[in-house]
Length: 137
Image: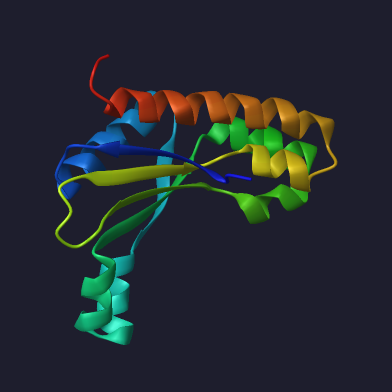
């Protein structure tokens, strides 16, 4: 089973990060957390291991209305929040990959019927955000 929606864009890493943030905001998501994996690996493991990973940023995206509904339906669902969105580029790569968690994972792990509706809406919004990053067809 795939657990993420993945696209690849012909954008430099920093531009892909900026556009991803904007696309998420347009869909009602704020970024609650940000983990710069490259910087963390540099500090904890050394530059060589960090450079092998390349540019790698994890954005913890949250749509407050959807999160509120999900937590009301299943208080334990907070362990799966926020929705992680990864922007990454391997060393020397010309393209940047953007991945968003597939909220269907929540449906499989929760017994609350309301979670299915919340996950479907979150999925639609995350997919819409990713789609705006792609060039027009």
